[in-house]
Length: 475
Image 1 (spheres, rainbow, N blue to C red):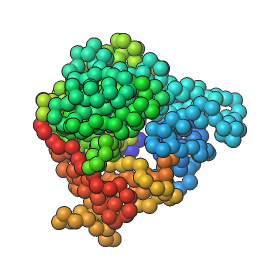
Image 2 (tube, one colour):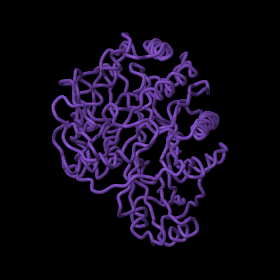
Image 3 (tube, rainbow, N blue to C red):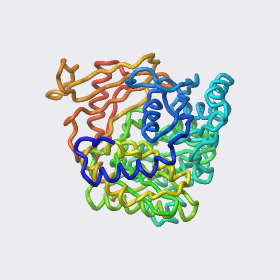
């Protein structure tokens, strides 16, 4: 493999070792790739071919937003399925994977008449043990997925010895929610997170904020329509910040550096807008080490109690009192991708999925951890993204420049402050804004920049999100 620019010997060693141990796992095998748009799956297939995969069939939940390198090199099928929000769209696509339409089954059977291909999905919210009739590589047991229920996480954190916010789990009923909010409000309101009765949810879709003194009627009505129980916590001001790791089959683990979750705030209503992930933010050193220590305790507890293997993430908020966890995702998350992107050529996702499958390999977790942390500190990654109102039919890419507090389209040959991609998604529309080189400094959170960039995209490109605010840094 040719050396990527600017890799240290340690980074090269970690990359080359991962490729070497993974090649026998993927070489000569065929994979049915699903769990994302065709544009992203085509890039995933190219990486699998680098590991020796014999071929891929792509099952996309849409064509997706992003610039493709020409038509996909592999056969593909688009599930004509959508949803009112990104979580609903994911659940709909997962149901179609488990019970595929006749046209998809016929196309896959023609491509894989022997039935020897493996399904490969980076992560799912629901239970998807097979993809169009093919066994799923690295399937996630129900006992692991259950911990994504936001009303169950506190017991796990307590058992692992990790400090957390005060909370109560009450019935999804207006009176019970009002009473719990009054008890827990520390002056800035409360946050309500519903259970997983109707399926696991993420991306702040099943979470509502109740402001100080508000009755929370709209939040209560929404949550009552989709869950039985609700976790109530005080609203935590601060920077939403996650920590990520991987647990290996022997119980060893690798944990990485903190990742900012870009969570923005519309000025009215009870919603949060989950809008990306990034590694520019640097918590104080003591807090960074606290997050990493918490991740190690989570990794140990997951493996000890559930036999867990694979990627996981613990989300929380860096408050004035320190970092407090709010949820646990026992699967790969968006932050893993930003960490891995800092080390070009590292097959990080495939390594984590091989661990999740339980493949016995020389994973060298200490080497992986040291190299990924080094790379992620040296090469900051990430951006801001979200679904959009309205329907988009094709991808458009624009470059914008921020100059003296104002934004404008970039001129030809000019280095952009932001690259904006706008295009289709299963919900109708999607946009991603990526900072240009040097546009964002390491240290501060990305969220204030994201607010400015979305305002520019609204004004210049018609993204239509409306006014947004960002969390306050309080530590």
